[in-house]
Length: 195
Image (cartoon, rainbow, N blue to C red; front, side, top):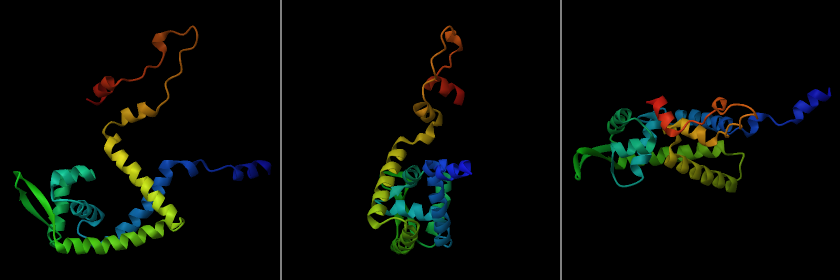
């Protein structure tokens, strides 16, 4: 009986696993957002693109694609979806006639504001376990981490990220040859593996 009691008293290893925590929250958010945006042009991705377009002066599709991490070809289709109901309009960039700027229309701003209110209510539901102050703190911390992650963009070279967090290999045992010791890959050797 003692073994069973001890097992219940020990914390679950998943309880402090960042991937597990982010996954649970992300799945809950995605399910709710998919439901709230089921009839929105382009769905959740269309909403994100509209959000990016609203944030500042009109930008070209390439800049929006880079900010959101969306393939440019996919983004073209999403903007097509937003353009059909008149949420956005494309126009030639005066600085580069080959480039198209994405302008948000009044109809697009109205649709965005309505859905933003719905999503805020869903977010409040997901964060109901927190006080308003805790919720604000969490949002601030997540924003800080998200912006930092986006700036570094670790998905460009996962080998580099793993090398940064992986502990150095143990030194060779006394009497062992240096040739048998594990070696750490350099950026050049990693580039050869990927190239």
